[in-house]
Amino acid sequence: MEVNRLGRETGHYVLDGVISVIDVENWKGYDDTSYTAKKQAEYTDLIVLNKWELVSERKLDECIDRILDIELDVPTAREKSDKGWVDKDLIFGLDAKLASLNPELQNGSHDRKDEHSHDHQSEVEVLSVTLSQPAGGMSGVDLAKLEGLLSKAPKDEVYRIKAVLYASTTPVSSTGERAQAPQNQCTPSRYILNWAFGRWTFNLASPGSSSTASASSSRTDTPVDSDVSTPVESSGEPTLRMTIITARYESTKWRKRIEAGEFIALEGNANDAELHVSRAL
Image (cartoon, rainbow, N blue to C red):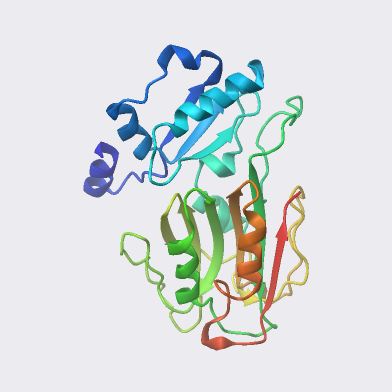
């Protein structure tokens, strides 16, 4: 609450998420399901289970059972660390400056040293979504449909949504605040979306690497672990490029809903869009 107060008063801070780290090895030392623990859990967006590799499967299950004993209306999302490492895309929001320079959003990358092997099955799944239109197309993203995704995604199923997109009208954050309006409103403008634990913000972004960049077509997705930008036609970049991080086993359901056109489409019911949804391996 204090961070939120300072953010409102100064405009210098944004509460991106509240994360609690549990030392599974020493869990018994602070096992607590009291009223205070419940209030802390209610304000926690993500629980990171640390040092779980050092205990037996039974002890890990006991720890998780005690967390569930707190009996929240909506279970708090959980993620196992990998020897102390956690995917930066899960922890932090999208860096606006970085996104303005590189709209290709390298999905699901672990910012860690090579010697740390990924020796457990990931607790999260990553979807890559690209919406394109023919060269010369001037349509933006259907913001009404997109808001349906942002408002309906349960916090225990979807952890993060990040995107660079073009919109013809100024999008609105979950607080009701409108993003900064562009100087030229004759064509769709570029925005950065960051959704975390049921809250989202839109920020006006600078154009892509080309001063004449605009929403256009893209035929090929960028591989998750690639440093090569997605090929785009000379006129610009895709209308939307999105990364969705879900809980384990949840990505298939959301992929089907997106592919059905429920949440991602061009405005005005344009039927010449190309929608590609893929899951990162």
